[in-house]
Image: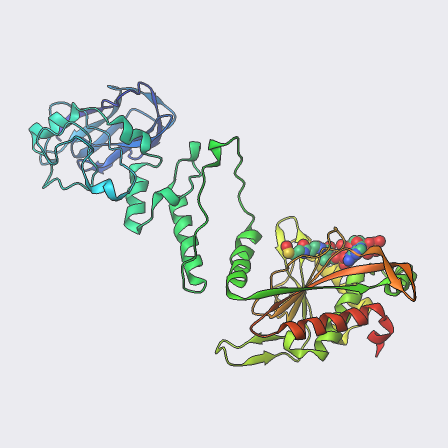
Amino acid sequence: MGEVKEVLVPDIGDFDAVDVIEVLVAAGDAVAKEDSLITLESDKATMDVPAPFGGTVKDVKVKAGDKVGQGALILTLDVADDAGAAPDDATSKPKPEPEPTGEEAAPPRGEPEASGEAPAPSPPERPTAGGPAPAQAAAETASFIDPSAFSKAYASPAVRRFARELGVDLTRVRGSGRKSRILKEDVQAFVKRSLAESAVGGASLPRVPTIDFTRFGEIERVALSRIQKISGPRLHASWVNVPHVTQNDEADITDLEAFRQDQKAAAKERGISLTPLAFIMKAVVAALREYPALNASLDSDGEHLVLKRYYHLGFAVDTPGGLVVPVIKDVDRKGVLEVARELGEISSAARDGKLKPDQIQGASFTVSSLGSIGGSFFTPIINAPEVAILGVGRARTMPVWRDGEFEPRLILPLSLSYDHRVVDGAMAVRYTTYLSKLLSDIRRLAL
Ligand code: CAO
């Protein structure tokens, strides 16, 4: 059994009572000289206190949440005989680490580089040639923290080390810890996100600046939902990979609406909510039959179009957890009432989070209807590798010039986004014109 030594909080510059935010060791742990023991946090920064010598932790005297000042007892160490240099002063300077910039390898301004009398803290990467001699270590323990380096640190040295190992520029990482401190998980999330982004198209994209909004006012950070985390990268992949063009058009659904109102009560008796969307889906499929290139996917060889002989329509559902896109299969083989029934059942399963895997797969074309909420035209993002998506806005009664006079007509806004590699503008507008005709005269749907 070696000698038991106390490890005290070293001089921490102008700060006299700082929070202990992490205790990195426990009784019984073997620590080497310079291993981090605890992490302290002031108003502006965090730093680790390293072990001044190696040994076995005997008794930890602080816990997370304590406030400590210079000279406070951190822990006692059972110092092994061969534990390396054991300075007389049982404190070791904390290790604030400067931001990982190009200046990192250089000693702090005005500090002699590797001098035995180094007065200011140095980053751990700095060559120590086997560690300082006892006299130097003693001199270092008597030194002050450089307050400017301290105030620059927004992550613990352990996290900085972790970030450096992964080549992560911490200035681009948003901290989720208290006072926006960057945690290890933030670095991991940043790496994951970067990998996902670079997988999109292989090229790196210009970056949106990372801003500390707390500089401008109060903020609240809310976690994205599971669905948002899944759908976000897919939407992004489509947006950056597929050259989108959106064709806006309108359909006069006055007659369709009159027919729907006529049928609504009877449908309701059968437990079916007969909304315009069921008619729109039937019309979409009839138009896809005329323009099969919109019910297709670009082959991964980039030289073929895969035309689908099935008509499975995805439809966007707004759920409490975010956007999901379930699928109604074989819309061409179902009647309007059957489609309406499935729309109701599947969208409530989606809202309850009860969709089965086969209900969210296999779409050949997607419809995104915001009509029950409001709005007119918008740019829906293609559900790639599909090549087109129809956005539907809210129908409004508008004055329409017909037979020499204005008539109030119910007009439905339509927005078709298409992959311009596959569909050209002429085909897109032919498709929406055809679709508009079908919706304006639903007798055509029966043909
Ligand atoms: N114009 C005017 N009224 C419309 C309409 C339109 N285009 N579409 C629906 N309505 C009306 C319906 O007729 C119904 O009224 P009535 O009961 O009087 O008939 C009411 O709005 C509610 O419809 P609904 O929402 O129950 O049914 P729906 O078939 O129109 O829509 C669904 C189903 C699942 C598509 C919808 O609930 C939904 O989630 N929409 C949001 C989709 C979305 O978020 N898209 C964006 C994706 S990109 O972020």
